[in-house]
Amino acid sequence: MRAEQGTDWPVVTYEAAQWTPSDFGSRRDRGFGSYQSAVTPAISAEQPDVPIALAALLDEASTEIVRFDAEMGGEIAPFSAALLRTESASSSEIEQVTASAKAIALAELGDRSRRNATEIVGNTRAMQAAVRLSDRLDTETILEMHLALLGDDNPRIPGGRWRDGAVWIGGRTPHSAEFVPPQHHRVLPAITDLIDFIARDDIPVLLQAAVAHAQFETIHPFPDGNGRTGRALIHALLRGKGLTQNITVPISAGLLTAPDDYFNALTAYRAGDLRPICRSFADATFDAVANGRRLVLELRSIREGWAEAHPVRRGSAADKILQALARQPVIDASFAQRELGISATASRRALADLEAAGIVTEFSGMRRNRCWRSDAVLEALDAFADRAGRRALH
Image (cartoon, rainbow, N blue to C red; front, side):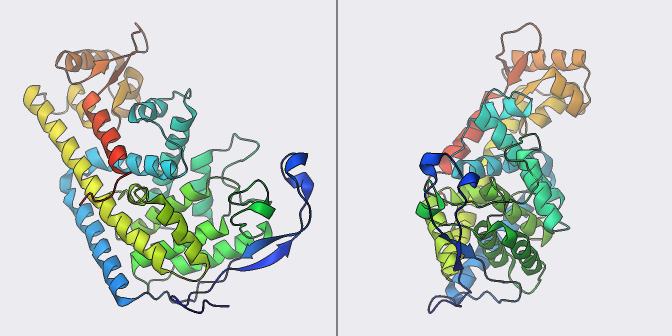
């Protein structure tokens, strides 16, 4: 079955499913009777087609991604991790999971006292897995991304496993839901078909990413973490197809500027219209590149200010710490020893020297297990997050 108008993309159909009360919630929430769940169409052999003007906009957005990726030049190491972190935080914020840059940095050092920050760090791991595994986009890659996101220590929702029951979006039960994804026995065949679609090389990459993401969200293959895994999948596809080579373009930050448009676009996709999700991806790309470029310029300016105010010897402990602060703006001696190969004594001495220069601030107030932060970097990261909620960045 196809849409009567729009771009003639196969539409989602529906089938009756039986309610099994023991599978869902409390007695008060259970309800009775059958409900309608989605049946996703196969897309592996379909040719996505959009109006000429929209295709041109997607091409222009793709060019912006390539240009931004190339702009990093020899400065990839200091900024790629910061961009990946901002993308992870923005993707989480779409799911209403928010935390400050400081809280996220502390969570990356092992602080588990702030749940939202810990979840965002999990999303960073999923993004890293997406990039690392981009040369083999298959079902196992998707499972590994989900495992990196959620871990395997939650007995209720373990990571890295397809769901074995029903899920729904909105409402207290599937009867009142806004959308009920396919029954669980349909998940793996639908994902296998999606992988075949992703494997094709006859579709413009950003168009392919938009369609693949919308199809993934429609399948909703996991009990939790579908949105974040699906947005990580975007970056696996962009890297695997060669549109990006060095960095993670913060597309989720672009989607965050108009989240209602994004969610409405997913609904339109299910009705057979590709145009809204493609336009969301194009607009998000322009916003993301503008915001990401501004962040990189701010981080570059901060680093130049450090070099002018407090020159350090190349390769010294202080130099290694300064190089790391853009990706890890909260640091302790253990991090310096583990990640940078600096002894505890040398790292404490270097951090004390950088504190005296006003580059970092010790904020733990403890004699042992002390932590230092770069306020300048944290402010730049928080400013990026604030801008991600606004349009007209470029």
